[in-house]
Length: 163
Length: 128
Image (cartoon, chains in turn red, orange):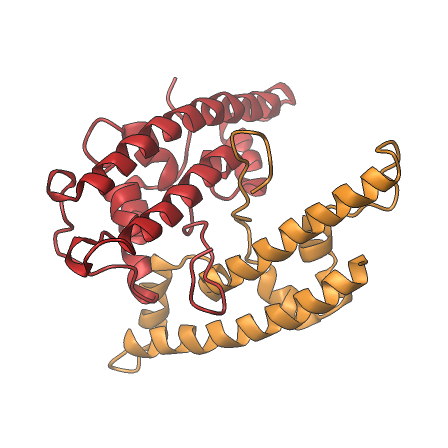
């Protein structure tokens, strides 16, 4: 059974792809973004690792999310009430699952680290690697879950470094 | 080290970060309202930042730093108590979010919208 979520996936894509442009740039922006096949070998390898680890995190998130909803149904809530109850404590929906958060954060930071080793023209904004490349038709559950996040779970330290 | 020490530093850093991101937020609104229509600007900016300035990564960084520090402090407290007694242990979200109103009303109000803690768990089960 797919994830039960309430958000608009396309709005989520637009939000998470556009919000980073309001922040200090991580890499040059291209419109449309650089395609996976045109990216450096390092970025392609990082994306392959990311999707593998994300898949494992999504399996945990799927079971967890379904159990949370079922627990609400067992308490007598109807389907809408159960979803409302689980979202009231987990605003990012199944993306609130800590393993999902860790996967996203780890690969955002890995992309920043990889970019630092490459000429500027080869650098890729992390949101392109984490979400745009995921929108290839073969990672629909990942896109569904990630786009429930109200913002990227990443920090910016006072010295300008991503943490 | 104590919860009071953690809160002293957290409140100072959070207030500084909040002041920074308010400037950033005001600039976003101005950029989005060339005609001066602030309602339209707010709508446009919130499409990208639905939770508002509290979701800026400066705030995420400060919250995460003190969440992890509180978690480490709790572990050391539990270890020194032999791991059997968690009385007096305050969970990070309880300290950093729920108790804020007893320290600073404005910061508490600002952090009301911080609903995605951005705390992960690594494959070894460690909070990260």
